[in-house]
Image (cartoon, rainbow, N blue to C red; front, side, top):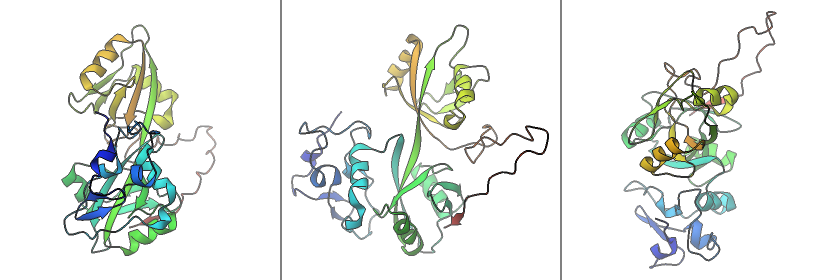
Length: 283
């Protein structure tokens, strides 16, 4: 159901209650009506208002949105980020050790330390952060310098991650099946057949591969699982919207890094040396 986020803020025009205090609501009160007066929220975030964020943990101090945030974060909550899904984790980082390795320039996740602070949080909250995800903001700061400073210096961290979403256009062919076994409730992909339509997509689109652990979130724009299954069975063309899931090295040729391994000596002459690794930092 599409909701009117203005109806949620009857006690104040510019504040939305989250956790133990109140803060501005970027998608409606700070930016105006994002849907041009219709009262409906854009669909890229599933009709989410910024106040749909998880409430801050009990006892966390409340703070206003920083002036340096600019329009990008407000727009992200109102309209989503193209090709990405956003989610938030809250960490009490008293020991200044998150258990995370990121690429310094892009803030892309390179590794999550098993048993580390972030890994434990994700296990408890049924979330997952995996290589290929990116840090979008920390404590509402989106500038890279501010993000790194917050991660290193602050003990209370509200980290917004962005997760890749792939739109795969599949056209059915005689004698070939879609080739994906999925969880009946979550639509998470459990198995991919070698000779299948999805396997063909993966060969043609190596950077947007569909892998075990990914989750189908829509089929031809339909998000209801049962109706989506009917759509798969009845239509010749399918647009699968797939959200990246945790990579499983033992089942997934892309491995834990989310990348295909380089070819081994393709020209028989030793090949070119691999490009230098981009600098990373452990947090």
